[in-house]
Length: 179
Image (cartoon, rainbow, N blue to C red):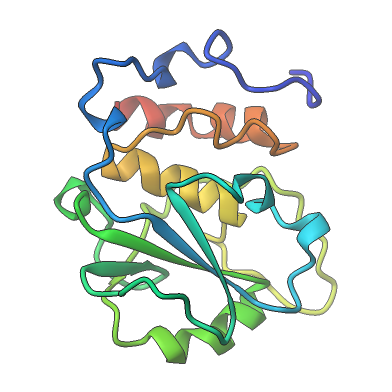
C-alpha cells in the first residue's frame, strides 16, 4: 500500500458510483458537521469536504439555518444506522472525543444511531492522557462507514485522507457486506 496515493475508482472498483445509480440524485438532507472551535482545521479529516453541497459545517456552539427535523446523530450507544435511516439527515459531531462529549448535550434531542462496532480505525492514536473509545473512528472514517450503512455514495470521501487505503483494507468485509 502506498500511503500517498489517492483513492480512485480504479483502486476501489467496488465503491464505484455510476450515473445510473439511484443515489446519484440526492434524496436526503445534507450531512451536518458540528465542528468544535478547538478542532484544528489543518488536522481535521473532514476539512477537504468543505464546499461540497452534500455537507454543511457549523462551528459549535453556533447553528446554521438548516432545520434538524428528520435528522439522526451519529454516536455511540444507539440503534445501528441502517438503510431504514437513508432518507434522514445525518449530524456528526467533530472534535476530540472529550470535546465531542461536551457538545452532545446540545443535540440530545436527536435520535442517536451507531455504527457496527466492528469498523476498525486506521488513524494512529497517540493520546497519552485520555483513552479513546475502542470503537472510535476518525470523523472521516465514521462518515464513510455511515454512508456505506445508509447506501449512499462514498466516491471521493477518502481521497485526501492519509490513511484512507488502509482504512478500506481493514474494513473490506464490512464494505462488501453492505455493497
